[in-house]
Amino acid sequence: MTTTYWLEHAWLGTHVEPNVAVDVTVTDGVGRVTAVRTDVTAPPPGATVLRGLTLPGLANAHSHAFHRALRATVQVGSGTFWTWREVMYAVADRLTPDTYHALARAVYAEMALTGITAVGEFHYVHHAPGGTRYADPNAMGEALIAAAADAGIRVTLLDTAYVSAGFGKEPDRHQLRFSDGTTQGWAERASLLTDRPHARIGAAVHSVRAVPADQLATVAEWAAERGAPLHVHLSEQTAENDACQAAHGCTPTRLLADHGVLGARTTGVHNTHLTDDDIKLIGGSATGTCMCPTTERDLADGIGPAVQLQQAGSPLSLGSDSHAVIDLFEEARAMELNERLRSRTRGHWTANALLRAASADGHAALGWPDAGAIEPGALADLVTVRLDSVRTAGALPRLGAETAVFSAGGADVSDVVAGGRVVVRDGEHLSVGDVPSALTEAIAALR
Image (cartoon, rainbow, N blue to C red):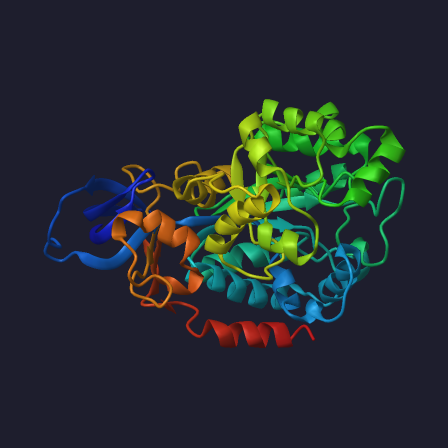
């Protein structure tokens, strides 16, 4: 089955083109772009018309779905990442496979409404409270995979190894839910998960404090054998760097490099507090960097050296992480604007480069290299941004990339096609429907 979409304006990776016709063919439930025609001055007969600026689907490369339940509740008073973590643990303690499915379904629908067509779920709440395994040891991961299908987006389940509370420390009572005892136990459980058309299974090292150094290679080898993406929280906190130096006499980046974790299929999340040598190790190994600016500022983590990392050879992607905000346009502009504040100069990335980080490079980091572009052969992801909202009205269409990154927000997305399936039409999620109510009910169940 082939459907034609007529795009009033389309971002084609380097520029905005008016009057573009895109043919999408669905085979075995998966839609791909089969033709892109420019200078089509009127919609072809029977074409679906998308007015505004159409982009390829956005990729949220770092998500913890259950953190969405913390929005606003952690903004009372003062504190640090570590005080926020205690509130987060309290929510994690109340999750069940059913409540997690309901919450993730609503969260992923919220993502779809903002133009996200694929998410990297950094998943570590594996077991019941106290560490008891469910009858299906992957019940929680399967709940997330099902939630993504319900919401109409793709997911890379980054099944996460988390077996210690810190260097030489056993998991605390909260972290027993996260632990498989050893990374070998983690590998045995994670191996039961399978890819499917909308879902891919990747791996993650939670952090160097959560996986003992002599067990890091197990996770890296598991991912390498499968050609799977491998992600890791890296140097988000100076306290972690100090503890790693005390335990191993090196930085977390050096520890990961020495145990085979870095490489072209690996993405470091945050990469905030790095030395010059760390940056060389990351860039020289083509390890990616996922920046999460809204979370990094929300938790007062700091501003990572994204410019230096990219210059060293590290591809950049973006994530919403704790979901203080779910808006990849905001993440993209925040990366540039944070750097402006630090350097007091402008123009570190073009709008085109920021959109690529939010689309093609994010998809590649999640193991979907055939997504993130409007071109023949690509997965048919189309995201249309209104050019007549109070934020975008009056913008020049040829400056659509600049408008999308620096003026628009997720609320300006009108239509979303993910893998050839219409997920959002005129601002309404077609399968979940009333997403605010779904979020309200799912979050209330955890309080």
